[in-house]
Length: 341
Image 1 (cartoon, rainbow, N blue to C red):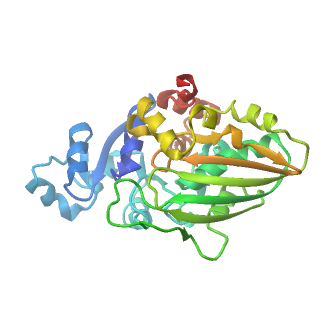
Image 2 (cartoon, rainbow, N blue to C red):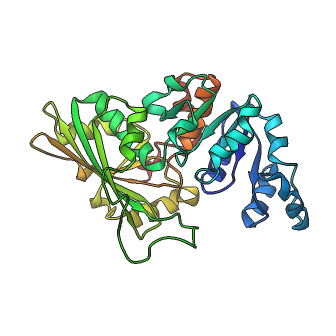
Image 3 (cartoon, rainbow, N blue to C red):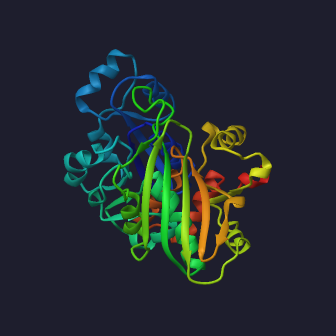
């Protein structure tokens, strides 16, 4: 039984913590918060809570929130830590804590790729992460791209990929930042970083990406144009994608005309409307000459959760790729959304 600590009980951390508790080969031994807010109170009622900042122990005590100790105490009990800290804090934690004791760590895509030995996507490079001490799960957008493009690359002869990300500007709970009435190129000068991150996982893929921030909080949307090196029909692509549990095919004919409608559907069938799958509009899949077009939506709050679970197994070398993915899918009910349609 792998003893897992989750450092950071925020948007990703709370979802990873719950997912770890659903696994039969892992034990969640604690989570951390930096300060005694409402999320800390929720965490303390459901998990063993520790202070992510040792100097803040007194703040939790004064707020009447029971903590078991500091991050230093938690790490002494763990085999692996999933770092779900804000961007750039993970590398600070690595230098301050993780490298000083023998503990493996899983980082998130907000960190630079050199924080870890490998950037990770379960479908694309699970085996390469086996036994690694430091693994970085790529960002939500990159996870969505890696999944889709790995499947296409495995089944068809493809050339250059051009992908445009229409990014949600902030997560729903972030109320102090974000554009209100505008669209922001991110960055202004193309390409965006996503292509480099995808190539860190799938090195031989020819891809260029651009991105724009939109005043929405629900999901990202990707528009992809992929060069084909063989004759492929839309039906061929649909047949391949519908076999992968981490891809959820939808149709505008079923009312899925926007990310709003996708979220409304997910609210009825998933806690927090967490969508762990890539959501691909089947009727967006088209071929014009030698170019394949696909549009997909990505729920940024949840899509990396199964990747974190698989990354734990890979780093700890306790399961083969197919076994880990199957266990994760089953525990999180990944691949079952279509039964509600």
